[in-house]
Image 1 (cartoon, rainbow, N blue to C red):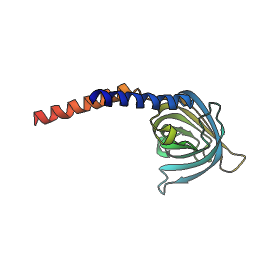
Image 2 (cartoon, helix red, strand yellow):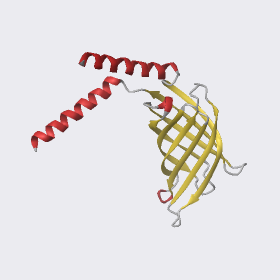
Image 3 (spheres, helix red, strand yellow):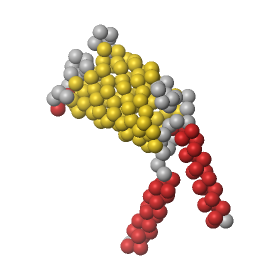
Amino acid sequence: MKRYVAGLTAVIAAAAFSVHASAGLIGPFELDAEGTFTQTFAPDFSTTNILITAAVTADPDGLGFTALTADVTADITAGNPFPSTGFFVLTGPGGTLTADVTGVFFDVLVPFTSAAGTFVVTGGTGIYSGLVGLGVFSAFSNLGTANAIEIDLGGILDIPAPGALGLLGIAGLGLAGRRRRAA
């Protein structure tokens, strides 16, 4: 019975990997998006929050994303460039992909003119479930058109090896068992 369960688990893990790999979700990628943003300032003028809604305009790697939303806050007290943190969500018919962002905004008072930084994938749904990744982003506001924004993303996506996840689980069980014995 144990061999049957172990074999079935290996087949399921291999099938999940092949589905993601065949969908072209593994490896380097680039995305471009265009949309609008709203920018609000804290009452004490210490931070500015920028909410972005954009349509994906270029998806040369065929990831299937159609929209991007983002929520980023910049610390105005730190000086220009202004450090920022937040997240973005990419959405498409196959599900969503969420990432945390860290970066800087430039000239946030005019409204902001540009931003740049890094991102780390934190989760996904649908066909993007189980993906991990990281990359860089840049954003440019179009001062000629009120609240228009262009966003460029580039990074790499992967699926963690099932064996690596299993090792983490075994290590966690070992630590839990050790903790019980010590108590």
